[in-house]
Amino acid sequence: MAPREPRRAGKNASTTRKTQAQARKQTQAQLADKLVYYERAVQDPEVDAQFIARTFRRLRGRPARALREDFCGTASLCAQWVRQDTRNRAYGIDLDRHTLEWGIQTHIAPLAERAAGITLIQQDVREPVAFKADAVAAFNFSYFVFRTRTELRDYFASIKRGLKKDGILYLDLYGGPETMEEREEKTVYDKFTYVWDQAAFNPITHEVTNYIHFEFPDRSVMHKAFTYHWRLWQIPEVQEIAMEAGFRDCLVYWECTDRASGEGNGVFRISRKGDNAPAFVCYLLCV
Ligand SMILES: C[S@@+](CC[C@H](N)C(=O)[O-])C[C@H]1O[C@@H](n2cnc3c(N)ncnc32)[C@H](O)[C@@H]1O
Image 1 (cartoon, protein in one colour):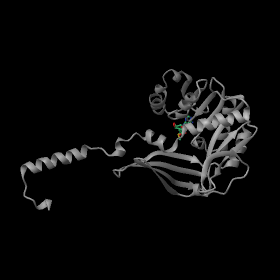
Image 2: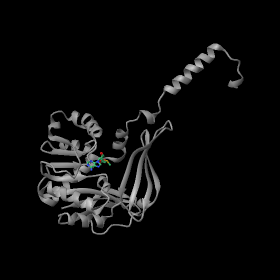
Image 3: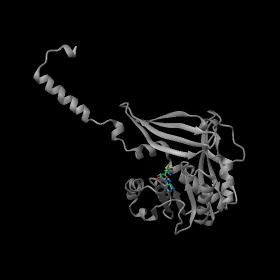
């Protein structure tokens, strides 16, 4: 066994070098760019962009051209929107300079001349803007960051002012009894595992703390890559607040069920009655 082996200078020197090399070798978690893994795990800009284009045309009888992406982060939806149609324009708004710059390098620079169709603005989404949009999208539940009715109403009212007369606000919302449980859910992807950690839920205030962690094949973990202190808003609350802010209606697009598997099939339709799923994600369209 190794500890009993006679000490030999050469062996000791090489062992020391090996140990130093191992110490220098970084784990996959240390080397990973959290924005890359965030996008792979939680975003599907193509699906969102097609949903916006299709529903806007159906509801308004004309195409949406100017899209404003609130809480845009890396602006992947903006990039997809202009890629989808050369006549499209996109405006992304986010507070975080680093994330915006990452999005410029990753999604916007490769668009070459089409990049001219995108404007990124570093500011609070509640601040006024100098343009009117056909559609505003606030996805991945980012508006949950506003935790009082007043804050959420003020935000929706500022969007209303920034929309054309027939403009539409697109939101998504997650809910169901499981979303009020303190639990972790793991999804295995190629070369990493995404962990959605519902760490805390306060039933009195509906305030939640959620984390995203990433696990890697070398067993390293990027712990708390993202942290969210949100209010877990319910559908009727958001609908009522949107109408208080000046929208005429707030339509729910509910996911249809695949008959064979009993699972959601990725098709969302206007619905007044949903199945009582343990957890769901739906779109809300404030019109
Ligand atoms: C959950 S990420 C959403 C990223 C992207 N929209 C998506 O669908 O995945 C939330 C983003 O909102 C930004 N943010 C938070 N509060 C904001 C505010 N009041 N105004 C503008 N951006 C804000 C953060 O910087 C972060 O990039």
